[in-house]
Length: 168
Image (cartoon, rainbow, N blue to C red; front, top):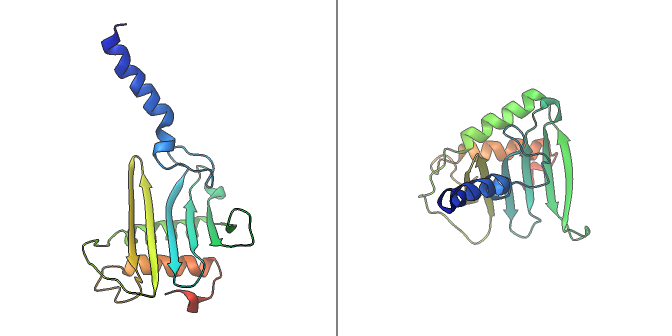
């Protein structure tokens, strides 16, 4: 094999070897295959309140799908208090549908404020990664095309049994 053909082959092998790391793989959802990984992460950073992060984890074995809810906490050595919520198939599908609906946002709408919250939605599909953050999406959600994101956030908040008055 010549040097001209071995370099691209080496680069391809290396890319395939490190692709999961490049694709945002983490150990939180565990295994990373074509059908097992984080579907999305939604972080809600509220003014003067701990950050709460929701991560929907898919599994090839559909009975092992779960939602990971992490709350910023000074009492834990890693800074986070996390709990895993097992999901029935219909609950997982409802969250997946709400996630799809939440992607209808328009990042060109520029809104901001001093207090409120910042919601960041991260999505990974194959090698396509996206992250979009919105200031208090509950504020004028329809006009900002954020109804889907708000619906997803409310559903996650309810599943985690968090106080609905703390969501803004």
